Image (tube, rainbow, N blue to C red; front, side, top):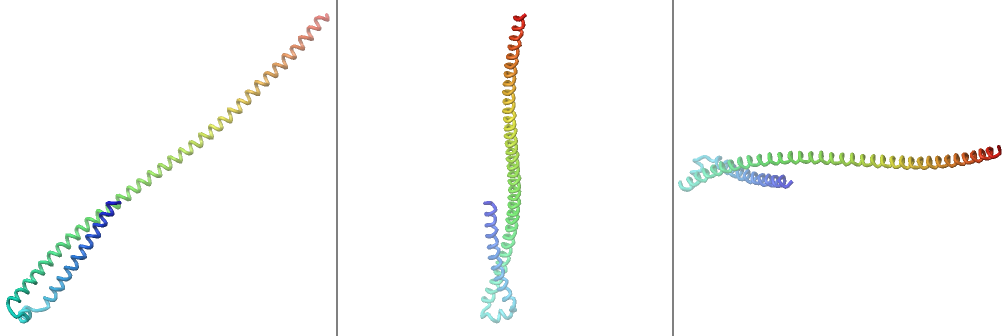
Length: 173
């Protein structure tokens, strides 16, 4: 994020420097063009002395040197700009890769969370079903115990009545 912004700012600065260098080169070329439109004889006739003529020649020579210097500077700036643009492109690709990894990680976290949630829900349902079955089993056990006690009581009563009847029969004989 910050690296991309810094590189973008450097690219903007290099673009401005390139535009400035282009303007200088354009001005020098314009001046050289104007100077080239005159022949040496015209320049010699237009100037009142030979020293002004040579000054003009020196000036044109300096302009050509400045032009070469500005062209070299422009080429250097352009090369630096291309490097910075490549850096920016690489950083953007790197950022996209990191974002893709983050999205994948987030997807995995969400999937894991959903799986855990489903397992917890399933476990709670299983536990609830177990509790229901346990409650039913306890009820059935309680009912069976009550039935057994009732049957025992009925059996004892019948045995008691049978014993009383046998005792009466034995006494009667």
